[in-house]
Length: 542
Image (cartoon, rainbow, N blue to C red; front, side, top):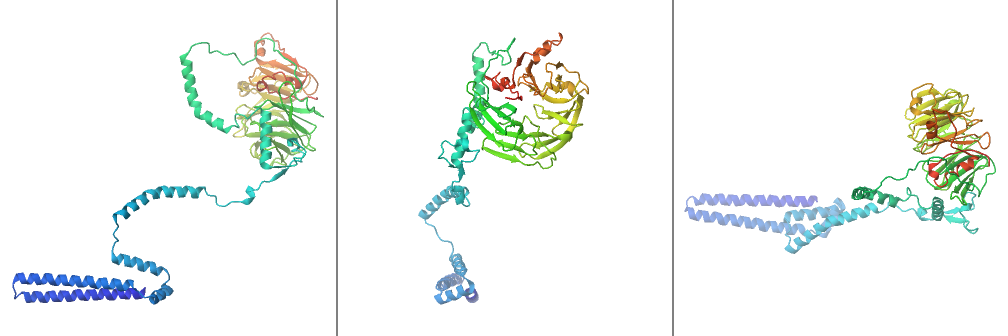
């Protein structure tokens, strides 16, 4: 490269010298022309300038030819000294010295077509590169087998030869079992129908408005509330007739969205039954070894079952979608000897553990981790969330009710339950209008929430005194028309009271319930045709 630069410098010096010589000749010619005629002088000057330009062009052509015809020995020496990039630099220098290359009409047309297609090709290549995975793991493609002889998976076996199943087949079988229990695919699980319903919701609303304006008639439908007079009841088969419990039942609860009932008790098992009013077939039973169940409850989305034991610090979570049992050995920050009673918020965000010595531990339902701890005076016996999950009502053993704000975890108010010797249970109506408090004397006081938030010693709207033993269970139906009270201390201690009936008979002092139910299990067959309108969890021995 250095030799090439020196050669170009010499050529430039020669060109400069030739131009100086030509200028001297022109100057000599001009001096001589002073003595000649003007026309002859101009002609000679033009001929000299043409000759100098032709000589310069010929000299430049020779230089370019010599520069392009470098010997092979020189090129090899330059590549060894300066590298392979020298060839590209020389070619670029030759192109610059030779001037721009002319493009023909056919080549220009081809260039335009290529430039127009280059954008589309670049986009396609970019999309292809984005979709291509970085690597492929062979272990992901390999199918893993699952042992079906495990005690929790034996119910899924269709034959004794099915000792192993792949994960895909097991997932499909769990889905089939869930759909069979639900009576099909639930609306919340059908993603395609949900997307289509969202797209057509606006169109359907407009069509309904148009239909309403096109015709006339009676648009008043029948009421979904309870009928007037006496409630008609019929005896149905027991909900758990395919598997009676070997011990005391502590929980009986309907599924939030399906016609399924759950039973759990001291026999260490949780059973699910499909309620049809005729046979009530068993769906599944899970067994928790050395874990007598104190309380079990469906999660608000209906996908999990949470169970606590009688003498354990841990609790279990049964994931019905995955078919797995998840033990929660200990919650960090909760120092309790036993974890028994708990409540779930209606929005499915929180879990409240009721500890000893008046401690209330608020947990995240998603992670099962401690959020905060609250403290009441004395010992807390029962708690309940408001329907909007914004407040917590805690009933102490001394008969005091504390109202907490869930967001700030601060006490908003405190009132005393009238005539309460020892608090046992508490419930809030679904419309957030009434609060029912049951005591050890069997009296259940009914309050309005507005009065409870303002007064320290509110007067109950009505006192239900039909029980002669401790009121251990109290709850409202979803329409807030029936208040159910029960006691575990004796049989046939279940009473149903119509709240509207109570207010109509308030002036006369009558306080009789609408009807009585013999056993707690019969209570769940009263509204078997419409189980979603009746959700009362009682306890009894069967």
